[in-house]
Length: 311
Image 1 (cartoon, rainbow, N blue to C red):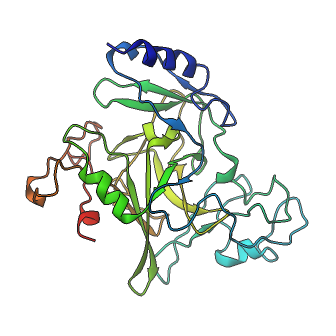
Image 2 (cartoon, rainbow, N blue to C red; image 1 turned 45 degrees about the horizontal axis):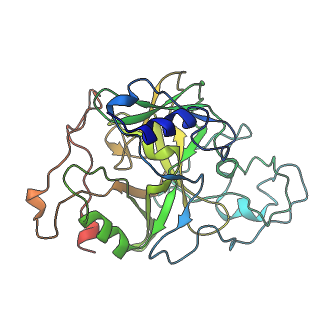
Image 3 (cartoon, rainbow, N blue to C red; image 1 turned 90 degrees about the horizontal axis):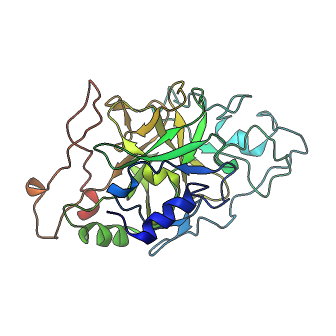
């Protein structure tokens, strides 16, 4: 049974898990809370620097545009001229696949140094959560997230925000996990061409947002895209891959794929890092966690990424 402190936490969080840090309250469905402890963590709507982080994600390091307009236009805006517009006029993510390279073009939003208005169509992820979300306790997959609103295809839903940590810290945290521990670290590898790749590790275990509760599915309704706003440190943005109805659970594929196929909208690979009890275990002895998503194309196991152990 949950402790009194955990119950008090869920009662207060039922008003707003984010404590006013999001545009709309993030609710908690308290039914069944007595069966499981609610995790104790610090809510942050955006990435924060953690151990080993080489670039502070909160710093503003990218240049701004000089568009003295309500909304930027691609033929004049320095931000949009980098890789073209990422969003439609309705602020829905557009297809980004480059036919020549085979990769998708990076997403750069206007930032705090830009002269355009706060209503610019190239400001989406930085605006935060706009759809009402509710955290709930599932039957067999722990905590999850449902939407209380209809979400159109291509709309931004939330970030997967947490501590940005270095490779060694990611490896250390991974090796410290026991077989029953939940792993939250996501490794994103962005391909820059000519065999070059940029790695970003985000861990929302102790500091994170509502994204930490979103479950995996082999047939998800969200997909993850690295988005740059104020710096080159990407924000891991989750967008709707199709129209989503109210009360539907939100899911994304922890491997970065969609329906077990490579995503058409991202130039990156992502993975929840694997769990193992000690450094001496071999790859073959890793205890893969079963997947209970129930999709027709379910692979039966949660995605496994052991590359951080051998980098």
